[in-house]
Image 1 (cartoon, rainbow, N blue to C red):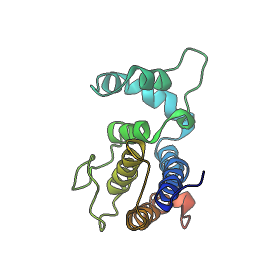
Image 2: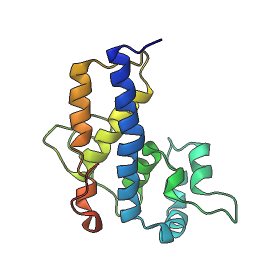
Image 3: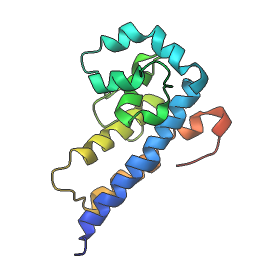
Length: 161
């Protein structure tokens, strides 16, 4: 059984989003919230995070593991990382279009980059047919390729996805 071009486009984009874009978001998160102080930050913000109506029990178990276990961003998916960046100080500013919409192509703010990665992740994960036209593939790939989260971090200046 061979894949159609549209199926191949979908899988290639899904891999970009799952592996590369998620890693970019995680590296940015670790830059803003260094791993050495993450558990302490989460403890300080536990009332806020536990009070979020959309936070699931599974997410809370990841953030607040059993005693003796260490919390690291390696366990966080894109959705949880973006949620934390939005709710842990210093909070990221929402793009003009809001957190749940695809930002304007010219908006390259950190909030827009995060919203863009999350939006495309949701499009991929919630796809009913697992296909992506060549036109959409080229547009979506270019949009994710243009995410500049890496270059906004001084220690990683000049890196690209």
